Length: 88
Image (cartoon, rainbow, N blue to C red; front, top):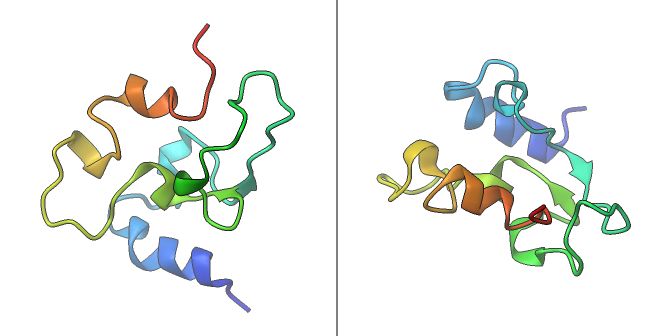
């Protein structure tokens, strides 16, 4: 049985990414482990899907045009990463 988020990734993200994992740049389908030192606490709940990092945690798939490249949820990759990761 294909889980709904995987099916979504195949149908939506798979249009650009053939491996369904943002070309290996970031894992998807993983739990946000706030106990890890490099991750912000509390978790950015608005970016998670049932407590997991998914394609839509970083990308806005349903907008015709996005202000940022690759339909990112932030104006830059750095700003997006800083949404969840602690700046060092």
